[in-house]
Image (cartoon, rainbow, N blue to C red; front, side):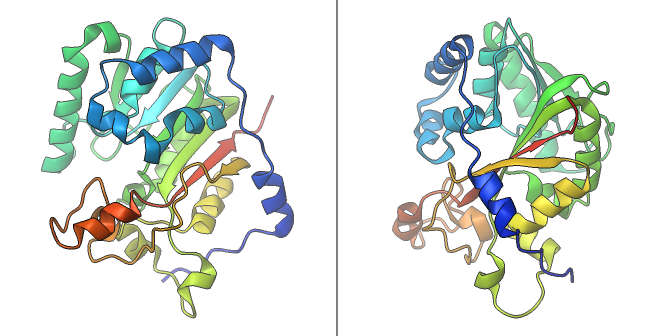
Length: 282
């Protein structure tokens, strides 16, 4: 059992919550708008924008079309469909997927499906650099100080469950240039006041898909990053975080099938923290 994460001080909360959204330049605004509207995105994926807020999220991270961006564990490529065309030509996208030698049938299928996705649309994905990261693959996300931004979406619980969070944070710190951004979106676990007395078992919590925000901030800052902003862009106050199948009870997974489906559809997708960290330096 791990102790409860420390509550952020009032001064830190005021500093981080007051950080404004980053303003995008004209090139980035146009490139991102075209990517969001592009036919490489299915109607089903576009329908999830109301929950995932990709334009506002990337703006908050400070995304620009000329950057070198590393996306860790892109899964089926929901964000890759946006990042790849937005960066194509001016910037660079590195997709750090699971690879083939994971020992997990699910992860191997996910990786091979992602490879097929890239190959099917070379006019969109031909400039994406695909690499493997994680157990059974390398520990680096690229050459030291070579990336402007590292992003990962809803993967912190998997990193915790696989005892890989520290390795990821170290790799992200090393690959980022001084002043580079680590952007995280993660299913947000219950707060200290919500849990009541007793300790939080982080591994158990992560098994439900949720991670306490204070715990994650503490881990990332301990790894050397500075918390530069937190946003409620992807918040959902209807999410009670106490479901039979964890976060996968909610859409889009709806793991319980028809059981109380109307209820879970009304809740919508999970409550998510959106955090921006910076590697110190100029």
